[in-house]
Length: 355
Image (cartoon, rainbow, N blue to C red; front, side, top):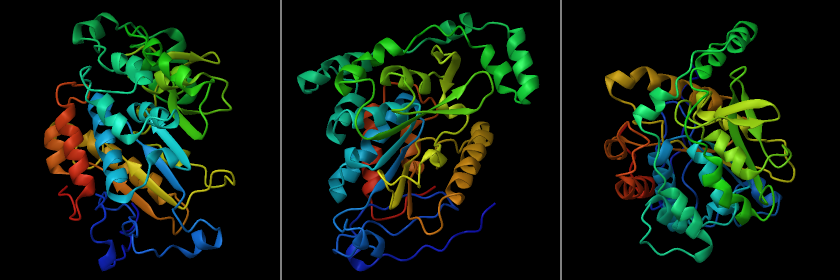
């Protein structure tokens, strides 16, 4: 476990800016500076106007996508930072869809309208197909049960070979009823190619060894399939076959995957890391889900501890008020408006959220 880092106190000029809710041992920088001062590094590199942000968008299902929308809109509203301008975006599960939408040009305000899942809300004509896809039903519990299959001999062999339980466990849900790729096909049209401009990394997990696969512009896979793979919650959505591998939800390994950021990139440098983690913080505070919460927080702490020394980090994670609105059923589609509002207000508050 890493030691508690020192967190510097913000200047008075910083007070109105968003208060970002950190995990107990996360390294969090002071809020963005509106006073006009900038880091030496940015000034030396000639980028005194804004930092190069590495934006990490975590897993969280339908509810998590609404939380992303609220937090990202709060970023844009309170700081003027457009999340579409992030130097790098790493997306996992619901975060991969949000990241893809940002990279094809969807604004934070339009994300809010999409996350509301309300066809009556006005949207630009080119987003109507995405709006229709956003109201598609998720599989029922009966559908999930009917999709359960006994593990294959190959999955047992993979479990023994890789010394990982994931191939065996994921084999049970290989016949999930719904293929997400057709729902995300509009992403390919909006990107105008197999992959959009801008650095985007989509995290999935291989069902054969339980290890992460990072899909990007060099992977030779269409955006719709990459996002469908990252969102393929075992038992709910069908795995995607990419280069002969069955890929499933990236949250199986980590709900954030901060360590997928590339700090050696000259084309897409990073000055600050911002993490939006709908499944961290207070999301699973109740006793029945305490083990899951500890695993999520431990993994996130390890990822933050591995970042370059001195790298400013901001973690947006639900406090108690947001978590009470979100609940633990992250696939629920009946509370989007409330979650968006909670994320917006909490991220934009100058006071710390209560964990």
